[in-house]
Amino acid sequence: MTEDVHEVYAIRYGHHDRRSSVNFIDGDPHDALQPLDFFVWAIVGPSGVTIVDTGFDEAMGQKRQRQITKPLREGLLALGVTPESVERVIISHLHYDHCGNYDLFPRARYHLQDREMAYATGRCMCHRVTRTPFEVEDVVAMVRKVFDGRAVFHDGEGEVVPGVTVHHIGGHSKGLQSVRVKTRRGYVVLAADASHLYAHIDGARVFPVVYNVGEVLEGYATLKRLATSPRHVVPGHDPLVLKRYPAVKPALESWVVKLDVEPKDG
Ligand SMILES: [Zn+2]
Ligand SMILES: [Zn+2]
Image (cartoon, rainbow, N blue to C red; front, side):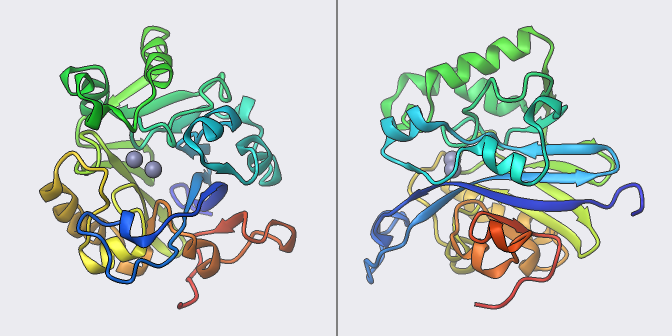
């Protein structure tokens, strides 16, 4: 393994059944069942482990009526990652499903965008519509990390370790960032909520939780530019990810999959 080439994994921890009509800003004529899965990602390389996003816990799942399929800690351990040993976490954005479990990584420093912290603590949180995807305790926990010297801020593009970079996309949340990882397959891009489903980036459609529609649409081109090919972009909430990419081992089927190999079609 050369010094900037990484392995990448998606760990599913949650699930939510919903209709396709609520997954797009202008609805969906089919109105079929189109569930969302909830993921955390692990990047493993010569500099150690970097975790992307921290999910939510059982209590938050109950509050938000989202199902926990496997607690995040179990998924990490199944992959051989002890949360207490993780030194780096990237937070794509501060929505409740991406920054909960905030005590799970006591040694980690957290990488996020200036604009996301400002957004989550500023005037837009006065409005119910823009506040809804955030949880005050999650945001306060991040403020505490800032004061503890455990936050690392990026403005636009930034390197986390050689071969792993963050890229401001905005759109869905003001400071949303996606993550580009150099792998043996080429550059894989973890979109997180820059594209919830393949249907969003493939069809230039927009998920209804949004700060700036124009930035969402422009973001799709950025994701494709960052990735070696459009097939290297991994959406943030699509159950198809578990079908297209192979499980790490049979016991982890539909739970932990490997993203640094070519996906199957379908
Ligand atoms: Zn989000
Ligand atoms: Zn999300």
